[in-house]
Image (tube, rainbow, N blue to C red):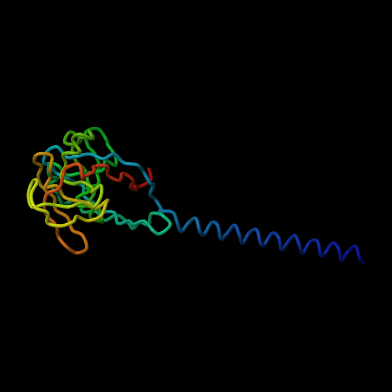
Length: 208
């Protein structure tokens, strides 16, 4: 009798341990699914500058954001294939893919989200850092004073470091910028060495 009781107790413990293990496994799988971007992969794209005005075709947008855990969350792409957009010389883009003489790019104009994507001739793009540093946007290295002219009168303070600025013109190692910070539009001159062109290159593309 005691033998049967011991056997039953052993079987009960095995079943309990098995159930606990399965429950833990299911929770882990569920958590992993919540942090994945279905159908997309994270890539390190190449930054490039547009050398001359060019047509962007096969346009689409992809809405995505990064959550508190640093994971990408995405929605389905919205295509607008019949629309053409003109990229201006100096625009900054990320190259997502190149096929023959065409590149699929993501336009970083003002870092506005969602980023517009489309196809452009590869010949109008340059990944040369020296050329990118002549583009029409940059990133502030640190908060700094801005002026009404080159070596002119101080107008105020720019936004904080990593703020995106539009570059309107350059002169004597200074650049005239425009930016929005704290709901206020700023425009003025800053030393050109206040601006970095080290743009974030991480983005997501459809899985191949």
